Structure formats: C-alpha cells, structure tokens
Length: 156
Length: 409
Image 1 (cartoon, each protein chain N blue to C red):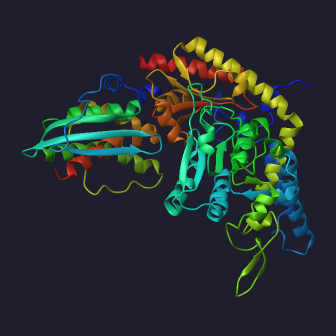
Image 2: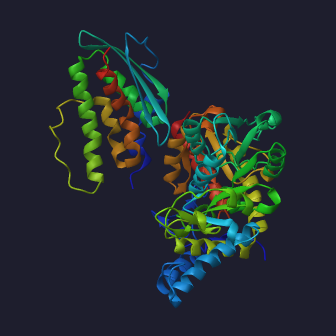
C-alpha cells in the first residue's frame, strides 16, 4: 500500500498552505472557466489573460482539497508568462503523467496514446506523480488543468 | 443481558476483515451498514431452497417463495407499528419510495402554486423529486430553516404551513444527526390541512419507529442502512392515503385485470409493486429486523447515545478547535458526527484516516443545500452503529491528531 508520503509531498503541502496566483481577473477581458468535481464538491475557477498568444496573467479561485488546490497553484506558476502553445504542451504532459496510469489502473492493456507525451520538463509538478497511486484522487489533480484548457479555449 | 458491542461485532463477518494486517474501523454506517451473518445466510438459504417467482406459481416452491416475501412484509409491518402488511410497500430504496410519493401523490394532488414544505437539512432524495415537480407543475417549495444548534427553527411554522399541501421532512439528519420533532410537525401540518411524508432512513435503523404514534401519512426508509441488503426499501402509508394514490410504475403484479381498453389496479400493497420484486432482499431485510429486535432497539439506542457522548467528549478534548456540526446533546441526536478539522479539507482527512483503516465519508453527503446553510463546501462524517465501540472512536481521534500534524495547519 502506498504511504501518505507518496501523496502529500512537502511541495504539495507548501502550495496548499500558500497558494500562488490566487485571486480573480476582470472578465472580460480575461477568459474565465469553472470546473467542478461533483463527487467531492471541489471547485476551481481559472482566469487567464492572453496577450500576443502568451499567458500574460493567470489567477485561480475556488476551494477544495490539498491535491486539487496545490495542483492548480503549481499549474499557474508553470504556465505564467509562457506562450499559449507551450502552455498547451505542459497541459498535455501533465495529463499524460496522470492519465497513462489511469488506463493502467483500469486493468486493461494500456491504450496507445494518440501522440507521445511532449518532452516537457514538469519540474515541481513531478511531485504530483504520486497521486496516481491513489486513483480516486486523480480527478482532484486534473481538475484545474481541465478548467485551464476550457479557459484558454474560451473566445476572449 | 448487557449490551456488548464486541460480541455483536463477531456477528458481522466483514468486520473481521483486516487490511494490511490491521482491523477495519468502520465508521460509515449512515452511508450503509454492514450485514450480520444471519442476514447473509437468510438470503443464501432463500436462493438455495426456496427461489421461484412470487404470486404466480401454483406449485409448492412458488407458494413458499410467496410466503417468504409476504412473511418479510409482515415482519417489517409489525416492527414499525403498521396497521397491517397491506400498508408496507417494498421499493428499491428510500429514494424510490420518495419518488413514488412525488410521482403518484404529487401528480394527483399538486398543481401550479401549491406549496410543499421541506427542511434545510433534507437529503437530495427528498429535494430533487420536488424540484422536478416545480419544473413540471409549477409548485412552490418552502424551507423550514435550521437554527445555530442544528435544530429545525419552527418559529415561523404557521406561515410556512399556511396553504401548504404537503410537509416532507427528515426524521434524523444524515449530516447533523439531529432528531426532528416529527410528531409535533405532523400534528401542526394536519391542523393546517397538509399531508405529511417523513424520510426516516436515518432514524429507523437506530431508534425504530412507531408509524401510528408519529401521526404521519407516509414514511420512507431503506433496508441497507439497517443491516439489510441493498436493493430493498420501504414506503409505509396509512391505508387510506395509499388507497387514494394512483399507481406509480405499471406492469405485472400491480394489476387485477388488463384489457385492450385499460387496466384495473391490484389491492394494497401490490398496487405499487410492478414487476418481479426483490424477494431475497426482502427476506434479508426481514432477517435484519429479527436480528435488531432480538438485541432490542432501546438497547441499541442507549449504546449509541453513550458512544456518541464519548465521541463528542473525546474529539473535543483531544482536538481543541474541531468543529462538530449539529446538536451538542447526545440524547437529541443520532451517532452521526460531521466535523471540520481546522483547515484540513475533508477529503484529506478521509485520506489520512484510510491509512489506519478508519472508514469515514467526506463530501456534501447528498445535502448540498444544508452545506450552503452551514457555509462549508463539505464535511468529514463519522457515523456510529451497534457494532462500534470506544476503540473505534479512539482510532478516529488518533487519526485526526495525525492529520493535524501532517498538515500543520
């Protein structure tokens, strides 16, 4: 059985206690999306300000467990100031880290990924890798990321 | 014979299970209860010796299967003080029983502007069916508020009841543990000309019920929270109330006659039981009732009041600023303890406790309107039953101390 230290890494707890880029942006002009996890009631609001195809600013609102909130906090730090295309690569790399394991946990053969995960260094986000050992928490970790994708896809 | 939770626990095979070489601490009985061996055996025996379809066969086996189903119905009827088995309708669960009332009684009696009075501490199962009638029929929902002590605030009851057609309330909150004054509420509702539906899903397993004494017209509860199997619930109705209600689901069993022109409905209670019923589940529920009665509902309630008092005291003493929602007086509540552990999120609380095999529920407990009233997104909830004892509460407390250390909040 995986231990709690696999899940609650120090950097995760740090982001939970001191979330980065917390707040709101006036929308419009910022793009805004809400994500809910109906199972546990976690909610994330993502605001992104896109200028010149770059994430000029990002803010995170909402409330939830340490995994959903710290994942969204680390996400905001990872994409701030990045070109949108690069942010999308980071999203894909992070979801690959989570979802490959999701397939394995289904007990079936691993489905071939539509494209190999991008070669992106995830840095601090690697700390969330332990979440895949706790299948029910994967949705907590990916909530902010799915919401970010929606926000980016919003027409400003 | 004195109450001995340890001896009772030995009757429940699942509670002997260890995970990672450590015992289970099952504190989620408000969600679903575990089953004693006698219930499991009764269901197996039914399939091994008696299984046939009911109310149809002319052969010996079919007669025995029918007797098993109707015997279980009689057992439940006696347990809840019904006037007879004809007042006990078997459903899939309490949710289906409540939906039955909304669809049958509701469609026959409610039109635009008619008011249904609920409370702020209802389970979604006693909210959403009425929301559906708001959308379909234009009815009005009114809400009995709760006070800071987690009790129903009845100070404005006369206004809420004025012109209301139905009062539909829980007898015990699945979040706060609050035992509501359903006898008083029933009397007030009837004086105002409203019918009364009680969601007794949390009350019946722990306190039993005397449907005649509380004065309600309809009472719903479920089998799986009272040591019975999943897949069987009960709608009790006063015979006149059930007689006046149109059928809900149509099909076999619920008819006396069918022609190309139409149908006539069967007698109570079969009028509301279309299709092949869950016979083994009914047999299991009957065995669960026999088991509860052999121990004694008063004994079970006394044990839970005492254990709840111990839990309230221990959690408060060891965890300082833990906030336990609901009544502080153990005799005014069931053994349902929803709490906030400073800023540690309920999901994280449940995750940490799982490491010690302490099973609690985290989330909104299918009571999101109540969560909004309490001003919390979710709670952690530990719930007690007859097989729990102080060692379970101690394991919970130790786990929570560990969670506070881990999160250092």
